[in-house]
Image 1 (cartoon, helix red, strand yellow):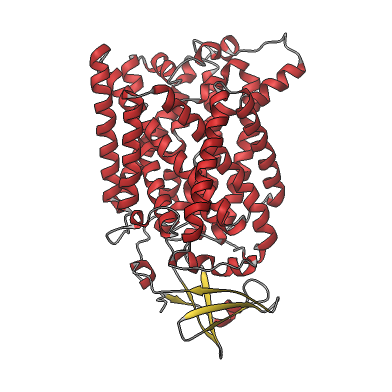
Image 2 (cartoon, rainbow, N blue to C red; image 1 turned 45 degrees about the vertical axis):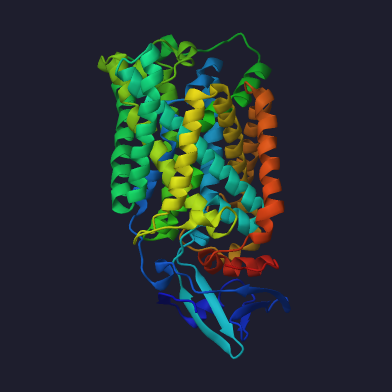
Length: 546
């Protein structure tokens, strides 16, 4: 029934998971699972043959550490070109301390995520099938799906996995819509379109750009990865150009903002009250495990890419913050700029505002395109598990392009852009706030999942990557992210809309889960293979049906 590609040794099979498992078949080709260490029947699994060419031995894996790192940069680089500067008003040193504290937390979180990805990369994990007479065979499979949603299902259970998956979908679609709108507005500004013409052409630019990046993702394969790499490198070059070209006009002693009159208590309050803008420097790294299906060696390449991306972005954050505090008009005024790199580029390179703004398009645009790639993977994953309509799992071609999920997500983006321009800007901005809170739930789920992972699955951990900080890094990350989330919920503008909005979304998706999805959910063939041993160790009684 199950097709495979790379057999491994019997000794390698029996050395996994501590205690081993006995899997026996019945006449209906179902598989029962018994844990030898516990001596009890755990559950029954219906494993059927997948129509997925990957499970029949056709590999589509194509990219390595460099390409996946550039995807990580693409997901986050928009935070270097916009949004982060609103925290400059508290002063350079306070905001620098804030950035370092949260940056270390995201690095610790990335180390946790990298270790879990090396263990459950949704590619190449062994599955053991045992008959009544003993071991039948043990093979290595290649799998398609993953992400925080998958890790949460393993560690916290199906319900919390569903909640995290829905938060991922909301974040990805809303952020993509916001970035596309941003690109449309920059195009209109660079072309000098104002007034009534702006209201006419800015939406057209946004819709046209959304169609373009959707087509790139629908073509997929090498075409997508080449474009992503080229524009990610362009975005990195723009950031480096800003940093190095500003050395000639920088005057740190003149422009840095330091208020010597405030008390220590006020300074501590400042440091811990402006985590919301700081998170833009780092948010998005958590999506990289979804690239496992395209990675040639997912255990090593994706894990390394996660850590490299986190470190690069941390260095960028410190450099941008320091340089921006050294340039006119200074941090006190720069906090109000929509595109904080533009004034520096105008000073150092003598560019016009339009030309400097145009340099921001690669970073913002590639982030939008990368989020389409991510929500295509994410929506298809949940569709394969019957958590969202099954029509969204359809794919095509040797690269398994999830065209139904991409089109479905892009239609939602199209709708949100329409809402922004023609219905209510306030509603769209409120949705962005709710998405920000959803992203914090994702951030927090990583160290929580890692702590459970270390307790339950540490024996499954691979040597490809292990976090040097271990559980201590997860605890620090969890503490800082909880503090950051608390400040977002209590000290951010428009918080009166944020909390009811997020609670409403949480209640809505919970009702959907308990009334519809819970009765239909299952595990796709790809998930069955990769999560097989994990759920046995977890001791859950779950029926897998697909």
